[in-house]
Length: 340
Image (cartoon, rainbow, N blue to C red; front, side):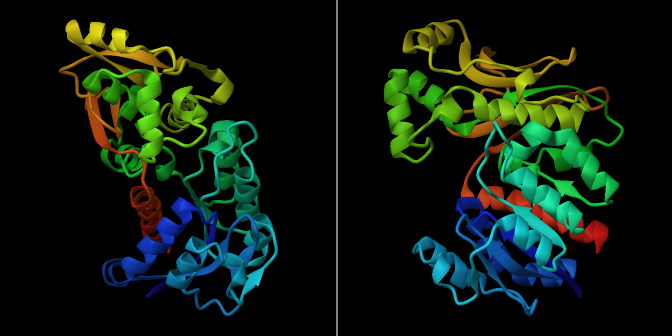
């Protein structure tokens, strides 16, 4: 049996989702992959719960405490920063699920570097560090002969990087474009189908939980742009950061524009694109109704153009607690298979 010890830093929606999946899929991990995964530390913004014995924490108990806002009441709680726990706790893998900060990349970047310094592989759902410091972090991982995996950063539960890594070997990726943000796709779909204003569609998205109280990252194209940066670096080898993306959001899209496009056989979608020339852009685009990228609701869709397989399309759920956790656990299993 492969005994793998992990640390979860960031115990919000995604972190708790990972804990739930590890709990519910424990038998499958042991039976199908001969692996026992023990989570020996869990950290949130207040501090960390650490199992000094190394046997592993009760994840069900931790999720319940976090849901009740009583995480700090755990008997093994210590007031300390995630980066300090990462360096001091003996473990094999860091699962980094702190909130995204596009401007600084923190605290994710510090957590990544602490993991590499202490010999830990990194799996993340956090776009910030990769949008700001992709090449630096990947270089450090390679220098230490460690894995840095980030399937969950782009399109949630949709396999993108693993698809290219395991299914498109020897293919040269020529360009990538797609719907990378489910919130904006929901809003644009609602505007078209219900013939309502942007403001009305946004309000409904917020009421249903698709959009945050402050929806800026989504509607201004910032979230999609961060994903474009990650795709550019990871799939096309472009040394890009957030400042290299030309970004236009959907706030100026009107119901009238949607109807006009519809009458001519098109829909308007917020598309993130890395072109063959290497330019990076996020903007509303006209997409033919019959095109595979014309997906509705909160779905994501990606078109990967290659030299051998030609156009490859992937469609799926781009967000959600368990969907995102699925991508993280997929990275975890892949690292276990390759490294343990």
